[in-house]
Amino acid sequence: VSLLVTAGAYFSVSLLVTAIGDGRLAGDVTSKVRERLEQVRRKIPKEQLTSVELRGATLDIKLRVFVTNSEDAKAVSDYVRLHPAQLPPPFVVLAHDLPLA
Image (cartoon, rainbow, N blue to C red; front, side, top):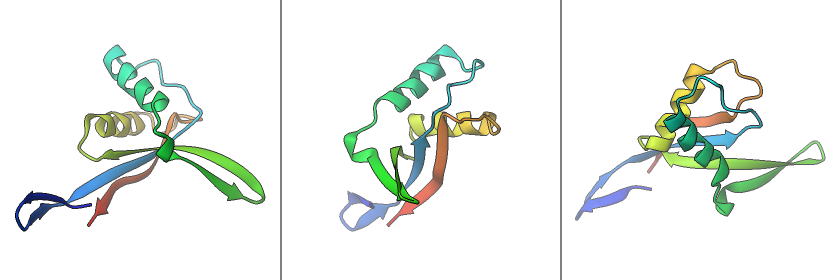
């Protein structure tokens, strides 16, 4: 979604799309960042809860969508970048920079 800045002028917006995983946050996360990331994991708008059917089974997915430059998006991106091998992960990034028209 492009946002109107002035009459006839627009700027583009891109999104970070992540699924909330089953993993716990790593112990090396500072308390301030931990608080932000725990809030990201807990406060999931009902519009971002979805179900997908795979091979006859239903999988419930918790999605979070953020404007790419937001503090929440930066915290999630940084966490994933610093913990690439964590299994199970607390976050799975589905789109790093999804542009909207």
